[in-house]
Image 1 (cartoon, rainbow, N blue to C red):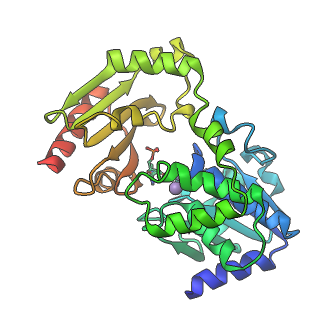
Image 2 (image 1 turned 180 degrees about the horizontal axis):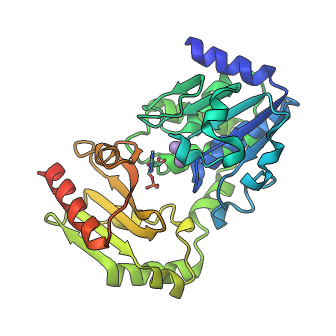
Length: 326
Ligand code: AMP
Ligand code: MN
Ligand code: MN
């Protein structure tokens, strides 16, 4: 077992009050890894809180409860350990002005993440880009202690493994992902609850939104190998759909026969938010996202482009993607 791994375990077990942080617009892995770690620490009688930087997607609102938001940041005093999970950089951490990344770096601050190019620069960090998820990494750490992991913690950690591996379908699902998942299942990870929370909970307004999105906004190019959609503001309004609920939305495009690369784009105040997915390891999208100021993994990545119109995004991205595919 390597030195950093041991160091993180001992920092966690010797802390008395831990603040766990994760990335903005949290997804299943962000929430699974942070709440899983919180439940484990609490079961050891170590006080632990999760700071969630943005509102939770609706599907997780009954699943992840009792967390702090940035407006509670005055409460940062009294924590003797800060832990970031699944978070690639200071901007994504979004911990607010009361707790900037510069301040954190001067504290007892650990980072556990699987994003290539992680730039948090925590004084103690374990970054493993080949790990399927941050939840997997946290589970591996906790299992290594030999201490009990209760079913609540196991359920959260399994959630992150399942969401980041597309329920064990994506290429990041290595043998170790199954091994750790098996151990979490043995400890009571509630698969039923996860499935009903994450996968079988689509509100009907979202289904109507998706139907219209595919009918009106869907484009295919590069001989059917690149599928993309721009999501217009009016359509979201019409169906009362918030992009905060977009986890899995891009899979509508990824799921199409013959499609190798999928892109979903919508406008935000800071520019056009672009999500990218690849279905073929020969054509990784991570490098494109990083080149354009974003980040992520080879097969799932994202960035924000400060361009005037979607037509500019479309031109840039079709150029990049067709160059990659050819
Ligand atoms: P998304 O399309 O937003 O679901 O993001 C896909 C993957 O890329 C996720 O694992 C994100 O954590 C990661 N990602 C997206 N945007 C960024 C970014 N600006 N920097 C680093 N990682 C990112
Ligand atoms: Mn994530
Ligand atoms: Mn992740």
